[in-house]
Image (cartoon, helix red, strand yellow):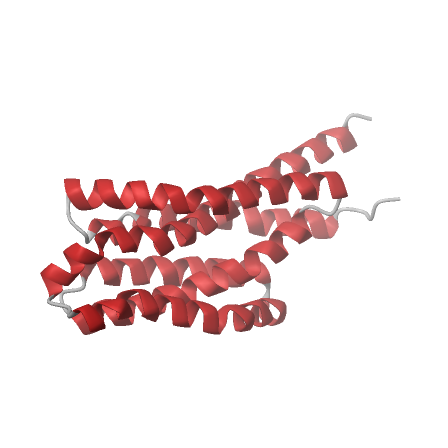
Length: 207
């Protein structure tokens, strides 16, 4: 008689842990939209951007992010949201490495465009994953509250973190800081999201 309650408890714990992993990925994306703005003067001085060309450090990211947001959602429907989440995190993390190691204007702008693509995929599929993980109205409302808080707080944290990293180290670290976050998020997603998907698929339907 103790089997089903223990299974339900393990299922609930796994879903909330999966939510925190999803939010960590989204937090990395949100941070990047604000953290770069703080470092723009340092980037301009180091790589020799003109005031006109400097805007492409931001625009390259925003254009690909906005342009591929709907496509990312559609690809998630076709190939699986969990698979696309992992692919988006991997692309964003690798692109962050490219940004951090960039030694020219073209390299930085190209890596920023790749970041935008990865961020679009992650953002597009995260909401769908949350909706699939939390089907009860009460739990879904709580999960969406956590997600909304992360999105709102990420912008403020990005400004503070960008200032600290730029002043204590240099502008390269505003991108390199994404590497441990991205790797940890991908590993945890592999451990939590895929087994949880199997557990939910095998679970009997609610009465």
